[in-house]
Length: 382
Ligand SMILES: [Zn+2]
Image (cartoon, rainbow, N blue to C red; front, side, top):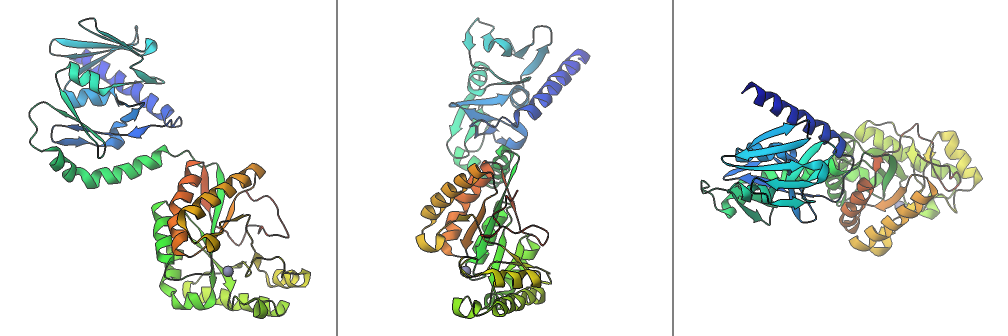
């Protein structure tokens, strides 16, 4: 008995070491849930997955689920699985699985460094269990006649848990961010902003909102929510009318002063971050820029234009934006993405966020201490 505990502990250690090393690899693996009769085993704990159509489970989970005894032989570096009078020998180094009847399978064992991961179906069936694959989930459910739930009942019972774990799993698969990206939304807030905030929240992504004075007064609650949820508040002016805004350097500055004081009044945020209507070319001549500098305002433009206002189409906006982000990445500067608070932009947002997060970008916000990127100062933003 004592020996068995030691052996079991060794298998655990080996698997835990392996687990930390495998996370970075993140190959194209699909999540799968493991069910045993009427119980769903948490996938976040199991780390079971499908690769090339085969379901792999860590041997530890397999053993716990099916009552199979696991013995790790450190001299031969093999794992012996035993249940009743049947046994399977797993030889990870040689990618070989041998049964007590001499049946052999090669290339059917995966090793993630030291962790032993073996194909679930073969092992289960060899030990007399039946596997039912349920498309939704997906779930590999092992049954031995003791189950009481139908597949439909099983699904219904665990649906919420599976959804939550799928989300968690998706996040665990993402590479650790190494690059920055800045999402910016102009012209809001409006009735679409709440949808955008909801999507950003789901992705744990932050953005900077360049807002118009009147819109903020109309959607005070939305502005306050931006602060609570970690977004940056910035100004886009009052009139958005080029004849009024650019009438003089003073008129441009005044619109921003009014707008920024509205941010302060509504959300108690001291922001100096601005984006002028239509961007700083061609209207922001030297005397205008000097006036903004003297007022202490930080003028941002963009280097990725989503053209969301032109496409008014979610998929088109997403595809185009992603192409522009790739071009920007080749220049080695962080993408500063111009978008607007529109319904179609909200539709495009998940695909853009998926792309950014799957490609190692962290979504950051503009701050009062960040040197602004604009058409007059195209420095490399990191
Ligand atoms: Zn605008």
